[in-house]
Length: 277
Image (tube, rainbow, N blue to C red):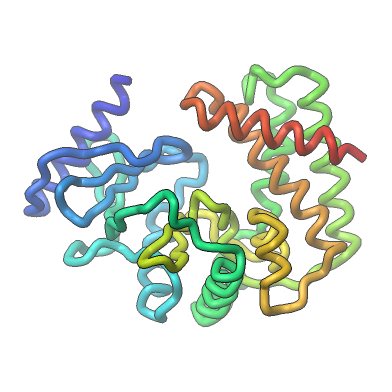
């Protein structure tokens, strides 16, 4: 893909200007953003491509969380934690952690790490006015689903299903009036790395305010059962449906980005068909 080649060339150019002896940029992930390992260095570059567009806020949050001892993958050592630009691309640099794909942390360690990360987020200062509400993205999706150019391969019935479930479950949450905390916003398994066998979170573009149940909704039910604080099932259930609706909508919009996108788009749409009102 020409744009991918251009992005990787830009990253290598920027890294070399910073004095890094980079041999190659190896793509680790290309979904909402492109993530590439700058081999052979212990450095990963994140190249902006996603819809959140909050690289500066993300790396500042990660820097503060790492300093507080939270279970996160920190910015790269020896590189100022900020957004860099090369050509038309923006990027940030992070510590590379080699991954053993067979060593995914279990539900109990993830629950404990998530609780630790929530405690650290509370220590970042008052949330009011600083973090968006968790439902802002969901309300934006409601509007985008009215545009036929958004996720054009979604058929009319499935588009209407997404609208209906977003309307219904957001109304249910308003009725529940859940508490507000500072959250990761999207701590699903792809945003958890195993570092020496322990879970570490990545991807903080989605930090927001909302109920604890919103974060737990992105993980398997066993994590919620191990989470050390009491959760409200009447809040968690609609949050799970909303998390699937969000994932389905964005994956259908980017359906040609790769086979993983189609898998997740179809999987979450099936979840929603089974959860219809």
